[in-house]
Image (cartoon, rainbow, N blue to C red; front, top):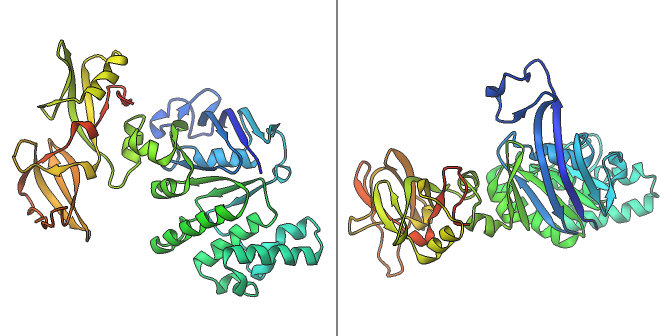
Length: 389
């Protein structure tokens, strides 16, 4: 239906009494003479029918970006194009965009079919056409049997589907969704994620979805845009971002449990590159060494990142010394929380290994050794960027 281009978009909120220059400690956002910079140099090309997810912690600028696309926030600088047409000064109602909010925002006195058909009524579409369109949307969303009910008679998931139905009934070019699942319980969120994936397959619309939940981002998006303090940190497919995080923030934000980080040092001499991790030497595979050499990376203090799945108990005792704090039995796997060099580390161990042997979880305060493959670790430099990606 529509491709979008966001070019150098910026949002600055003018100063209030609490955001004058000199109060920078109260926020991580940039504060200028003009005001607080909520979104900075946002550049993104979105293909027709692509599903884009903006993800990041609260206050990172993702909802502000979405509202600029919708026309609910003025674009301070930069340009927004939809289908190649400049939209900066186009009214929200004329952008052919629909939005689903965190709150359902349903009319309590109207029945489900009236809530869904309300946008078409505003367009003065004839009643027969409205009924036909509403029935089709209700079929897609599994709401046919609820059309004569009022919102108070619906569950949270049903209300959210009605809100989505109202957004898609007029077949918008772009569908914006602002944390639509955050008010639902965990089980219902999982179900609604599946429903949104199914919906995406049934309608020809470009999606922009905002969430702080990285699980939603990983499961829904064709590409995800990770934001922090108004800046884009990385754009990529979910798998690419997981496997190749651009910096320390992305590495820690994407993945559950989050990546483990250890203090280390990058060394270089005639024999090539090597590292120390918590004071212990470790050889690097040739592939990583070649990448470091290609970037002329200098010796420096580093942070070594390892996913919990890639840590393992080192039976030979040659790994990193760790003290067990907590073990969590998760059914098919055990999460072992340890202290390593004064930092918390988590390793995920299968309950039963490939040889059929059962893993006996260590006791609390027990001393163990943990290891990992240098092939599966990430090296982050003093500037927090990934040195080998």
